[in-house]
Length: 599
Ligand SMILES: [Ca+2]
Ligand SMILES: [Ca+2]
Ligand SMILES: [Ca+2]
Ligand SMILES: [Ca+2]
Image: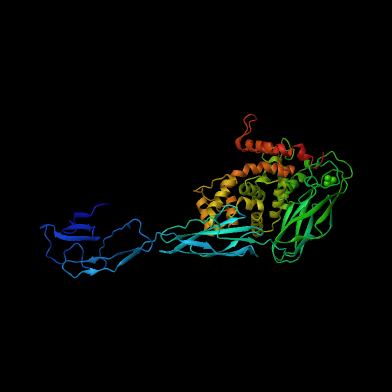
């Protein structure tokens, strides 16, 4: 740099008996740059007489006779856009006629491009609408656009990143406003400044009712306490084309002891279920849900619970038959001092109800019953071998594939995606949407429906404002990691055969960014990563003691303390990390648990 001449001699021996003299110089006043290459006979130091003996062969067989010189030119400072810089070269071999190259032209582009998102309708009739933008640039021309969006006046986030396209479909939500602006980049990387006000703003119209009406099939249902379950029906009438959903709640979520006779049948004491979200696929006109009945020994007479439909989505409305009364008729006439949970069959069935939200299948039930019946003289009760006792059987339900893929999946989903514990009612309601699948394909469909519905909830939108798009893949995954407090690895351990696909952070971002995975599929993959699975495993174990055995929310202090003990062990009591036996033992022999069924 700074030099205006360069002289050197290059010895080509032994390959070639030549010395090549190079003489390069720049005439600063004319801008003429000259290279002169002279081949000298290495012995005589004189130009060789042989016309074919130079360092550059005749181009008989291309490219043996081709050569080039390369040079870089820095433009003078302050050149304005449009300034042309022209170069051409003249090549002279020996005494031959000069060869002129074509002229090369560079044009300076020192100006930023200008772009804008085109005007949008003040109100969009549908949640999905087309957004267009355009731009101009003097000089090299616009190469790409980045389009930003803000929802309901919130912070702007990237929607389309460095795209050459000039339009895309945007999907918003009913009743929300969206503002857009674009920033263009030209072919030489000049980048437009962001505007101070958005280019275009629009609102998505509030959803118009679809005309679907959802209601109970009957006003009253009745079941005897000794019957295992009762099936209730919800019907859809009117418009049957779209996907709609409705929540089921009930009046039986009281905290009174089960022995207290209030005339109200209570979940936990008298039944399991009655909390659900029912999703009607397009064309479906009825859905059923199952309430599981507990055959306690309380003499309580007929008890009723009121079931209600609330929170219809998809523009549906709840019809006149928005509630139904379920009566459970008693089968006890004399008080019993024997608690039915003491019997093996009752205990085993209750594990199915409390962890899997269903009645047992015959094969599974017989297997578990057999484990306990042959477990020592106490049949798995106190003092039995620890390899087959009630604690071991109950923990088997938590560790079962069915619970892991449903209950633990739901629990982990709340913790990982929203960064909080699910409430008992959230958990049971969402678990019911994954229960009773008849095939793996149906199960996959239910999980997809659950996630899609979950992402429509306000709590999700508030935590991921505008982030669930491919353009925001990196921010979306970072937000998942932040809320879950999990860092995805950049290298992943070998994939186990029974495990969902495992990815590195970069892979997950790349798949979402390229559109290979939707936001919903990305969320699901995140929740299925080993790091996330491991993070919440003990917490799920503790939470299920409350959700499953006690059918209620945990007290925070008790929950935290059990998580600590399970994670780190407890020196004073000698409990080792990961020792769940103490935990389960404490709950299944607790008075609160046993008094769900009898005294
Ligand atoms: Ca009762
Ligand atoms: Ca009862
Ligand atoms: Ca009974
Ligand atoms: Ca009873």
